[in-house]
Amino acid sequence: MVIESIRDLNRAVPFVPYQIHMNSGEDYVVPHPDFISVAPRGSFVVLIDRRDRPHHLSALLIERVSRLNRRGRRNASSRKR
Image (cartoon, rainbow, N blue to C red; front, side):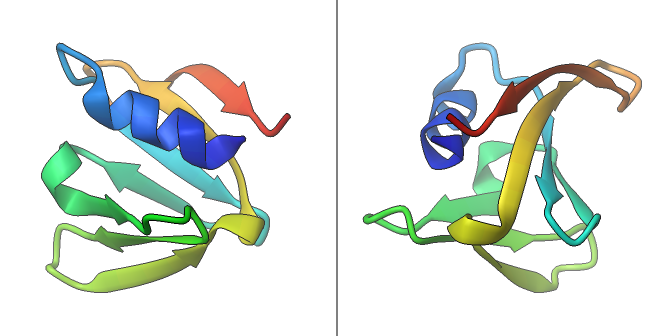
């Protein structure tokens, strides 16, 4: 499940920034775990972008997540199961 992948990425030590890819084609970068919160039941996440705007993302609409390398490019991906 993608939500479990997000939780795992948030707990990684050292933390590696990652990107959330939505079914709509939108992408959201998570530069640090402080910028994202996962609902206890995993039904949605709230992401704060660099402009301090909140984005409420339904777990049903998250296509995948992928780690970013130091230059902000995609490195590896984690897909829905």
